[in-house]
Length: 147
Image 1 (cartoon, rainbow, N blue to C red):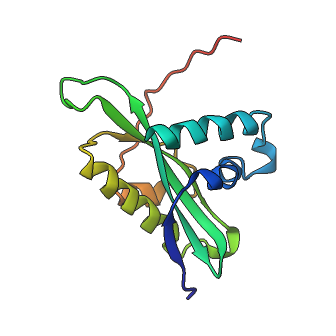
Image 2 (spheres, helix red, strand yellow; image 1 turned 180 degrees about the horizontal axis):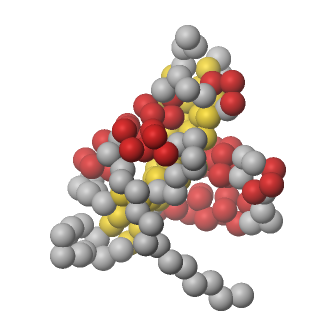
């Protein structure tokens, strides 16, 4: 088993976090620079926080939370929701509990800020992990995009 350490995402990590977002070549999009710009601002404003796992100085995994100003709802007076984003582990380090630990620690941090509602988009590979962390399938999402 590999020994790894965990640390908080900083502004200088923005490009690495963006690479986690676009880690599959077929998903690579032209807005990576736009995402880095957004991420730096969100970190400074406290609307994004994340964790990275390192092994011998190399970043091997990461996960983040984007706080969404949702407004209070009938069942949650906190105006913010947390969206789990940028969860990534290098292929050789998967299935060792690293992502689970990062996400669990982020959930605790958000809960300490009074956040009660969390969402995410789960890949097939991550589905079981998120269920074990208390997430339920939610299939009623719709989207409209103007071009």
